[in-house]
Image 1 (cartoon, one colour):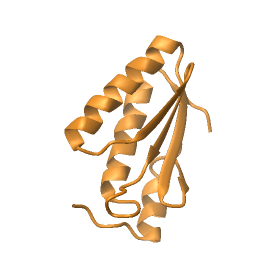
Image 2 (spheres, one colour):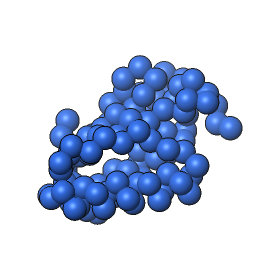
Image 3 (tube, one colour):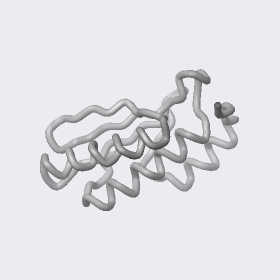
Image 4 (cartoon, rainbow, N blue to C red):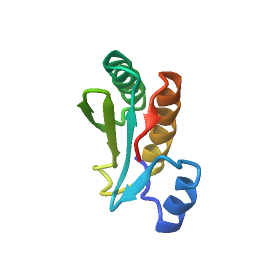
Length: 102
């Protein structure tokens, strides 16, 4: 179980995640992959990371654009797990040469 982050903690940690934004109790980011298969590789890698963390994002695939939404539903908001997974997703996006859309 992870505790809810304060607004100040979320704001401070988002400074290290420039491609992510806060939307209420959700962290969001979208990335455009160089091609459809690279986008699917990103989804697959994030799925493996999420399973290992036992913390699963919402993912939306639209051709080459992959959108992610993170929130700890069991806690009713944002926790450190969301921030950690956002960092992992950002690293995987870089690895597959996907660029942020926002």
